[in-house]
Amino acid sequence: MLNKYPLWKSLMVLFIVAFGALYASPNLYGEDPAVQISGLRGVEITETSLDSVKSQLDQESITYQSIALENGQLLVRFQNTESQLKARDLLDESLGDKYSVALNLTPATPDWLASLGGTPMKLGLDLSGGVHFLMEVNMNEAIIKAQDGMVGDFRNDLRGEKIRYRSVKKTSDAIVVQLRNEEDLAKAESFLSKRYRDFLFDDDSDSLTLKASMTEQKLKEIREYALQQNITIIRNRVNELGVAEPLVQRQGQKHIVIELPGVQDTAKAKEILNATATIEFRMVDQENDISNALNGRVPASSQLLSDRDGRPYLVKKRIMLTGDHIIDANSGFDENGRSQVNITLDSPGGTKFSNATKSNIGKPMASVFIEYKPTDRKDPQGNTIFEKQEEIISVATIQARLGKSFRITGSDSPAEAHNLALLLRAGALIAPIQIVEERTVGPTLGAENVQLGFQAILMGFGLVFVFMIVYYRAFGIVANLALGANLVLIVGVMSMIPGATLTLPGMAGIVLTVGMAVDANVLIFERIREEMRAGKSVQQSIHQGYDAAFSTIIDANITTLIAALILFAVGTGPIKGFAVTLSIGILTSMFTAVIGTRTVVNAVWGGKRLDKLSI
Image (cartoon, rainbow, N blue to C red; front, side, top):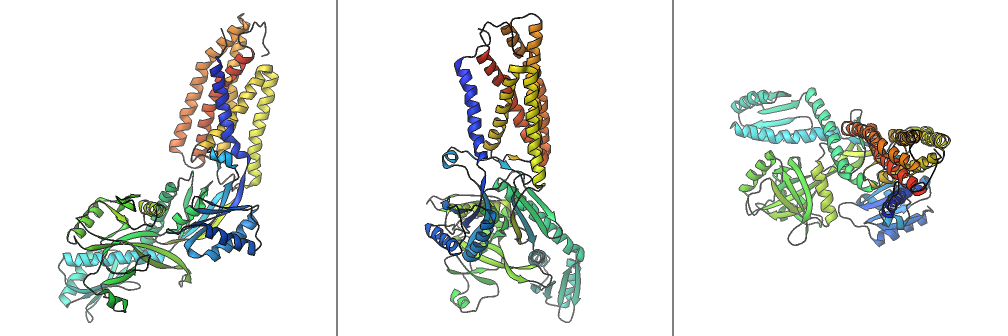
C-alpha cells in the first residue's frame, strides 16, 4: 500500500527524536557557580578535608548550596558569584600551596539525567563564558636557563679542542672561563669567538680569564623564543585537557592570554597550565660521604636533595639528560602493580642518554623532578621572583645501557603518574610562568548581542512557522513539527559530542539550517502540488512528490556539507564553530525534513482514499 510505513520504522523515528530530546534537556537546567578544590602532586582530598572546608565556610557565614566529594575533588556549589568569590579567597588562603582552588561553573543537571550521560551543551566565551587566565613569563629565568646550558656547551667545546681550563662559571651577566696560561687563553678566545658570534668576549691576561656576555640581539632572541615556545607548549597542554576552541595568544612582551570556553575541570586546568615542571636525570654521588654533606660539607660537584619523605640523597650536579628531549610519556603500571611513567626520547636524547648510561651500569641514578613556584618577592624590574624546587621522585640502579625508551617509578598514585606524564609529554616550559589573573568571564560580546543572537533564531523560526502554516496549511504544520524536532536534535547532538562548543557564529549556522530545512519541505510540497495538478491521485502525488524531490535535496545538502567540512578543516575559532553547527544541522534537517515529515504524512494521510489535500 502506498504511503504506509511499517510500525517499526515509525517507532524508530519517534525513538530518535525522543533520544535527542532527552540529551538536549540538560540545557534547561543551567549552571551553578562553584569552587573546585583538588590536591597537588599526589595530595588526596578526603572526608576530613570536606569537614574542614565546611567548618571554614560556616565560620565566615558564607552560604552554599551543597558540598560534595566527587572524583577525588571537592566541589562546593553556591547560589551566586558573590559567595563563590568570597569562598575562593578564603579557601585559597587557608588551604595553602598543597591544594588547587579554582572557580568553576558546574551544570545543575539532575543526578538521574547525569547518570545517563546527559550534559549541557558547551557554550563559547562569547555566549556563556568560561575561564580566563593571564599568565606572565619570567624572562630573567629564561636567560639564566640559557646561560646554564651555555656553561655546559663551553666545557664540552673546550674539551673537544683540548684547550685546558680551570673552571667555567656563570655570573649574573656573563660566563667566565678561567684558563691555565696565556696560550690557552688566546686559543680559547680565538675558538669561542668564532663559534659563538652572538657573544661578546673580553679577556684579562692578568687573571687568565675570558668573559663572555650575550649581545642584546641574543638576549632579545632568548626572550622571544621563551615566549613563543611557552605558547606552543601551553597549546599542547590545552589540547591534552580536551578543551574545545581554546584561545592561546601573546599579549605584550611577557604575557600570555588563555581562554578556555566551557571548561569544567578548572582546577586541573589551573594545575596543568601553571606547572613549570621538567625532569632531570643525574647520577647519585657514591664517592663522597652523605653524612659530611648533611653536616654542611657538600662537595662542589654534587648537590644535596631529598625525596618526598625527606630521605636525603647526594647527587651529581652534572645533568645526564633533561626533559627537553622527551617526545612522549604515558602512565601505566609495572609488573608489581606500582604506578610508572614510560618515557620515549628523540634521537639526540636517546644517543646522549645511551652514552651517559653505558659507563654507569650497576650504579644508582636519580630522577629529579623540578618545579619553579612564584614567591611574593619582586626583582628590580618588577618581575616575580621564582623559587626553584627540586625533589627526587625515584632512585634506581642502571641495569643496562638505556636508549630511547625507558621508565621511571616513584609516583604515589596513578593520578600523579598521569599528571607527570601529561606535563612531560606536553613539554617543559622554557621559562617559569605564573597566573597573574584568573577569572570566570561572561559573554565577551555583551549581554545585548547575545540576546540579539537568540532573538534572531526565534524570529527566524517564528516567521518560517507562520509562512508554512499560511502557505501550506496542514502540511505546513507538519513541516513546523519537523523544524522543531530539527532544533531539538541539533542541541542534543551538540550536547553529546565531546568538545563541541556553540559560539555566536554557530548560532548563525543554526539560523541558516532553519532555512535549509524548510527549503527541503518546500521542494517536496511543491512537487506534490505539481503531481496533483497533473491529475494523479492523492496517494500517487504524495509518493511521487517525496521520491522525485529526494535526489534534488540530497545534491543540495551534500554540496553544502562538503563546504562546511572544508571550513572546519582549514578554519579556526569562530569559523569552526559555524562549520560544526552547519554540518550537524544539515544532517539533522535531512532526517527531519524527509524521513520525519514522511512519517507524519504517512501516519495521517497515507493509505486512505482522499480526493484532496490541505496543501
